[in-house]
Amino acid sequence: MLRPGRPEGTKLPERRFRELEHAHDSGANLPFWLAHAARTRWGTELAIRPVSEAVLVRATVKWLVGRADYVIHAAAYADVAACTRRPDTAFAANVHGTQTVLDAVVASPVKRLVFVSSASVYGDGTPAEDSVVRFTEDQPLTPISVYANTKLWGEHQARLMLGGSGTEYSIVRYFSVYGDPQIPKPGSHSWMVPWLALSAHTGQPMRLNGGGHEVRDMVHVEDIAHATILALVTDRAAGQAINIGTGIPTSVRRIAELIAAHYPEAAFVETPTPDGDPRGGCADTRRATDLLGWHPAITLSEGIDRYVHWLNTTPDAVPDWFTAPTTAAASAA
Image 1 (cartoon, rainbow, N blue to C red):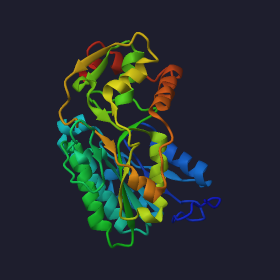
Image 2: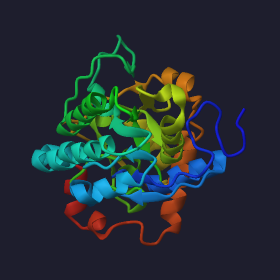
Image 3: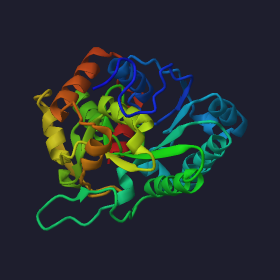
Image 4: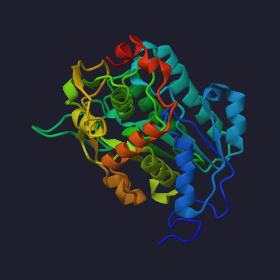
């Protein structure tokens, strides 16, 4: 049972958090959902200070972290294709930026840091015959992209610097995050639901990378936020890496079919698999259940319904570049 304002078996203080440092390039308004999760579950208000470009400015990060009780480090250049094109930028944001945050945390009274990692650290894994790979936290980590490699470095560095220090740490490995107001970026092939939904919404064919046979574990940002807050404050999560996914494998084609149900004229076109794109799989969620008591609440069908509703009711949701005659096609290819 949960006592009012404080979850059982956590380090969440009776008083409100003073500060929560957060930024994440998921595009799905994670700060809002983090605050929402704490408020609805425990009656706790979070003071959130976003940190993005400022993550590279040591003085700014040191000042912010010095005023924090807990830190969620989710700031990243979170785009597989962009990191592949510009590994120097990926290094600056995801490696140097993470080191800046860790240095500030070590020199502060912060109680715990949650490092937001990615399922991409698993690479392709080794699927059993005629089955989808299910990634477990303790299996070998074999990233196949620059982005994934920077995330794996961040995991190792958090352990090295915080293990045995006065600050606890937890690592959360997000699977495929989606939810409004997430919008794809030019030149990217990340964020499957927005790419497919915006294509159908604007009358463009939905591009099925790899023929639509790749598999994703789609987890709604609202569920992501709830799990992240639990990893921040649950005693047993300290020192652990935890998958945050649904455990349900869904093919890219099936995701497109769920979206197409809202757009009767939608068409599909098969395209090659982009460089660095993993075959995919799904999360083994037993650790999240055992340590956090967490279960995803939003089904993919419901999440897609919510996203399409947001598209239909938000006049400025579609960026201009997406409907440009050549740009959209080149970006989605």
